[in-house]
Image (cartoon, rainbow, N blue to C red; front, top):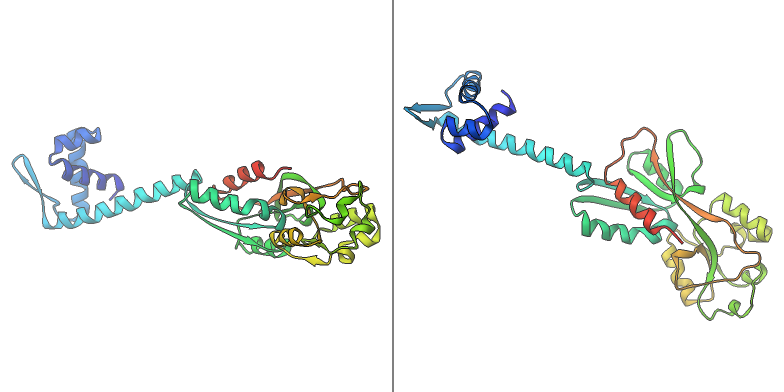
Length: 293
């Protein structure tokens, strides 16, 4: 028994005659007759009563027809779902996001899926890079969008850079530090400094620029994985936020001397050798559009 034979059976019933069914299937009538006869032989029973030029399903044939329609429907649905997943229009996607990219990417990604890809089952997880990497390695996540500098090179990971963005010190409009034309780090330290957890490379950069007192372990007094909360704190207090400039457009960049010259690098991390979910291309395209200064 083949799927083609079941389709022949359905077409024959729907058309009501061998000639019309053969025409609809682009077959010769003898070829269609042989297909139906082979199906009946395999079933061990007749599917049709031949009444002159008319055909009529037997009781057994009606039962086979019902099940054949269900089988063909399921196969067609499976094929359609495969095409949708291939095109990123269905399936599931589990993405982990670090604090920086998550602040700028999570809500737009959820909106993009709701508006344009309603059949995709999206799960977004937030957390530290170490915790997200663990979820990736345990197959609980399909990909990560994180600070690339916080990911140690490993043979089981593939990392592709998505964007490089400026990190700066920011504060609310009207902050006392904005009265000066330039700001030195010792003045900044007089106020609470807020930041997400920073990579070792960023910590080294801060120490090189401003001295040992600028190491995050020494100067950051407000640390949180969720940058949105830290932005709110900076808006409503004299706390100074150290973060990606684009994460808080309404805050004012401090005129630091010397300026923070290096950029944060955001990357897409996947497991080496693992098949990529088709919908991941949506995340990649959106990140490349949005993660920019």
